[in-house]
Amino acid sequence: MIHSYHILGTGYQPAHWREHARQSCRASSAARARTHVKRRELGLAALAGAATACLGGWGGRGKAAGAPSRPLGIGPDVFPALNQYVRGRPLIYLDSAATTQRPSAVLDAIDDFYRRDNANPGPAFHELARRANARYESARSTLAGFLNASSAEEIVWVRGTTEGINLVASSWASARLRPGDEILLTVAEHTSNLLPWRLAADATGAKVRCVDVDEEGRISLQDLEGKLCSRTRLVSFSHVSNVAGYINPAAEICARAHRAGARVFVDAAQSAPHLALDVQAMGCDFLAFSSHKMLGPMGIGVLWARREILEEMRPYQAGSNMAHEADLSTETLEHAARKFGAGTPNVSGPVGLAAAVDYAAALGHEKIERHEAALVAHALERLRSVPRLRLLGPQAPEGRIPVFSFTLEGLAPQNVARRLDAQGIAIRAGDLAALPLLKRFGLTAAARASCYLYTRFDEIDQFAEALGHIARSS
Ligand code: PMP
Image (tube, rainbow, N blue to C red; front, top):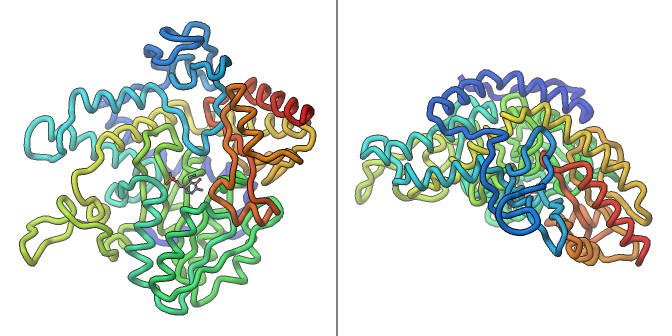
């Protein structure tokens, strides 16, 4: 039995997100425990702290002698790409909201798959095909556990968040929307959660409307309420903004959208890396995220949708594996998620993503949250002391992930990023694929520093000092 609208209750406020995350964690712990046991049996887990040879080299080539340990007990060699010099200085990587670095456990899982088990997967052909199939299906179960999905059949493999959104815009929205229907987005959406819906609206005569945000980038629940109406067919919003870093009250938004009779799509690209997600508790209909933003490989991600909705949808692409008994004029479609898996799948991607999920689980979600909350508090305090700095998004540490978008008065953000790059500090600058939100803040560009579970406090200190120096010397 699939539960459709499980609502956490009204009055769910952003400040309660940690409690929500804890509840989600507890609710899904049984599923996670099951998948962990399964993965241990398969011998796939190379978990936290596994010491491996360093590929890069701290201060040059070869062994990572002298590289400092990282938080959460992460050994100095676990993230090889972090152990390198850039422009003659130890790399400080603060671009994790764009893509994270990968731990050895993930690199090893991918390498191991190609070295031992590589075959076009299938349950009945030969030993390697069976092994590849087992790893592929095991990854599906791991991701179902990660989301507390009702079933692994709800996990659609996609290339990333963008493809997940496009799949639903093409397959679900374009087939259902009629002239006069409305899609409700927010002004804080990433371009990938804007353009696919606009294409669907153009093709069907539907209209895209946008909910406003407040001065700190929080979705205005009042404006949402005012814009939800009987014409609203879909609400799509980012759980966490890639600019403001604010954690929107997803369960509350889903509940309100459902009361208006709309379906809800949650863009979890920036929340899946940081929060314990529970799609049943959240009460959404669709949710998508990208592996590369949460320690996994590029080119893979997950679209989750409730099984009954997947069953109603037409295939997005067609070909082998998504149908059987395909003859000249007939075929039998596979069910649920499998209907969307046309062609030979990407197996190493799910294998790597599952290893990433295992790695984070072994570190401990609560410990990761605590470390990231401390990073937020520390960074906000340090950034406050930088002259001429304007921080976008919430100024208080609560309900926020460690993503910091900012401007330095009188300096182009791209220029700030270039000057930090010259010191081995990697940040990002530009429109951050969120121009409507930047315009809402009166800007067309901003710089963004983003941290992850491996970020050290002293890296934040060095970044803030470098920024202070740039501000004072310009
Ligand atoms: N939504 C948000 C909020 C994002 O931050 C991103 C990536 N920057 C995307 C969607 C798109 O993700 P991807 O490029 O991995 O498909």
